[in-house]
Image (cartoon, rainbow, N blue to C red):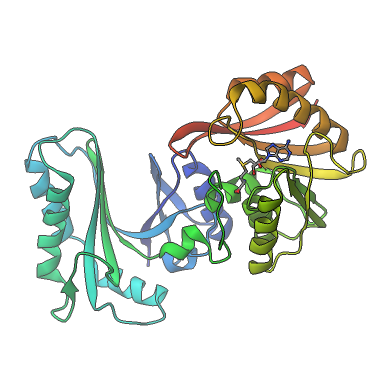
Length: 350
Ligand SMILES: C[S@@+](CC[C@H](N)C(=O)[O-])C[C@H]1O[C@@H](n2cnc3c(N)ncnc32)[C@H](O)[C@@H]1O
């Protein structure tokens, strides 16, 4: 038996998310990347993928349509593709992911990008009209709070129709009780943790830890030696400690200035951090000096073979600061964070 599935990710994290799929299911075969989507085939049911940490949602694919025109004819194609889909298999997979429970209500979620002669809602209605003919009688179509969701995603001439196997806890995480305004999405923190090439000997530091998302995601990904974090604001430190406790993660989190850390030279093997973007937190002018000071301090405390993984929207400033202090950037992943382009830089001391 082979299953066609896809994961939705933050745009920019598709490759990393598929890498995570591959690490769990070695025979997973990539079919296609689209913006924020990785479509693949596996021999193992996609319900096994609900533990993924870099994906926002997991779907069993009902249809992948290419060459969709901009006119209303596209709606007929969407309707036809839904009618042709194996809905019975999708329902079985959904039940497997939900401990055997029977879905009693369903709804269609529709997303659309690009210019077409029909509305997002029309595409959703086309899927809904087909499903009304296919789903068991006892299942009721509702507008909100459905047991099972059928999603249609259209971007230009391409469409994916699928059944969502995951629920909101996949992307929001149960530990994250408290948020700060610039708090990071857990899936992005998980991607940064992966990029740090985790090992069980790691002494991991997030010197600007905010609500603690990165430290927690690193702790949940792989074993480690020590987790250290801190923030300038005592309220952030309190929040990070409470979130870590809720996640059952043991971390030492302190109030400190990341430019002057109470840590021994060469005592940390991984720094993973989300820098102030200079918008919600700090300003561009402050970042000019802050980034230079941070790189200098990171140089002091990181082991010579250590890795620095940092997220910022101030690409140029961060690259300049790294270069000035002789760091080498081994990887840059471009993504969208809080609606703006940002990059994750993986750097090592040259
Ligand atoms: C972008 S936020 C980090 C958000 C965090 N990753 C989360 O998920 O909540 C940057 C954090 O850096 C902290 N910060 C700014 N300047 C700092 C400094 N000099 N030392 C330590 N923390 C600082 C801010 O208080 C803020 O919490």
